[in-house]
View: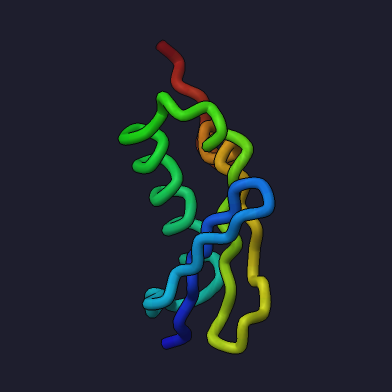
Amino acid sequence: MPRYFFNTRVGNDLIPDTEGEELRDPDHAWEVARTMIQELLQDRGNQPNLLTAWLEVTDEAGEVVLEFPFSEALIGPPDVPPTTH
């Protein structure tokens, strides 16, 4: 399985993920990135600069697979139907 690295970028600062995680594909990496951001915002949501941060997910070759802004993790994925309550 390919290994993906979830580097956090806040402004000009990059916090590298040196271990990475073996995942089945980029779609799975997107799901993991979203969950990671949501958990981080729950734990440290009182830091407003986090909403301007993003995860820069790279593959083993260092190529950027996706960039996931923290603010987008607060929005539900488009394929989830809204609740009818």
